[in-house]
Length: 483
Image 1 (cartoon, rainbow, N blue to C red):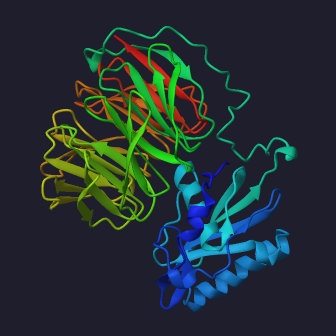
Image 2 (cartoon, rainbow, N blue to C red):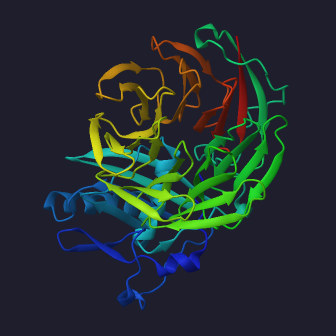
Image 3 (cartoon, rainbow, N blue to C red):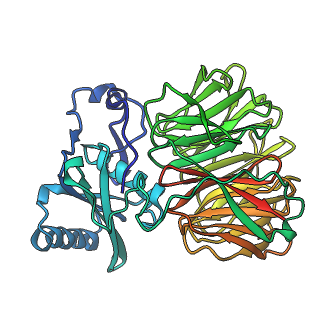
């Protein structure tokens, strides 16, 4: 499985050093400001092609004698029985670390990258891994067996998934005419057809967004690019250049004249849509940017990230207006209410609502499971939440009351999107499916199967007649929904 590629190493070498994570213990971490006193520290060691390392993650107090005993036991297992050199087994442990679900490609990749960097290793491209999770005593350990695969080594073993390739058993779909019949009533959706496959990205597609007129599509990928596509033909129109790190999110301005993107270089970038020219960079986040969203009037921009904050910016100047704090984990998603008065954010086991004009927290909704995706209904009355549990929850925004649970997905729900009429909800999951739900009843209308890998993002066209989705394989697909 390929990790996020680590770009622009010269910049990263200037950044982090150590942060205290446990009773006097210091561990290097990604995402902290430069420490002048640490300039003389050795540079990270690069993992060579063909080299094998093992990263073991656990949430624990490393000073606990029971944990220390288990740590030694695990080390002996990998060294004596698995044939791994002792200096190639690394632990990523603290009382605050969150070990991800190994079935969620994106979060597992990020965890591996952060864990290896925390142990002083430079992470190259072409990283393959397999994982196992096991319980020992009161602790749960996840071991990632990581190999840096050289192209000369050939195809990875079957149990190692390469998101840039499509399995041989999954034939590439042939382009079909794009549907033109709008979705007038989601309860009458009785047929689906695949519209088009957009090929160009060569790594995970993390985000997809429609232009306000529905003629163009933007996609952000781990391959370091944001690409613009002509929706009617699937032709790549433009590539936004200048970033040297994986891109995690993209959003169109309400008037269609600009785009905002975010990535693991901690920056939000604004682009002129017509020319692809970079307009400005918004700097303030202290770790990766997960999500960007324009206010309905286009005057402000919201962003969220791994520094556990939401930030509000003045779009015309790039000035930071507010920093919203309170989340205890990465803030994976932020969204404006349709009237522009409030924002919702999530990423831990809560959804927080904020007053846009002041940045004041209005309400905290406890959802009892870690969430990855969030979307407002078009009328602003409801919120849809998806996450690691595989369940989609519909909440009343004004009270936080749970209206219903949409059950069907078997793995993490990475993205949710309401149809423009509010009657249908689409959800995308690591279980290789996109599901369509009747929001009034919670009934599953259709399951779009036949996908070739995890589906990371989904978005409705403004007319509501086409659904765009992005995959871990690097492809995008457009599906038409006909009544």
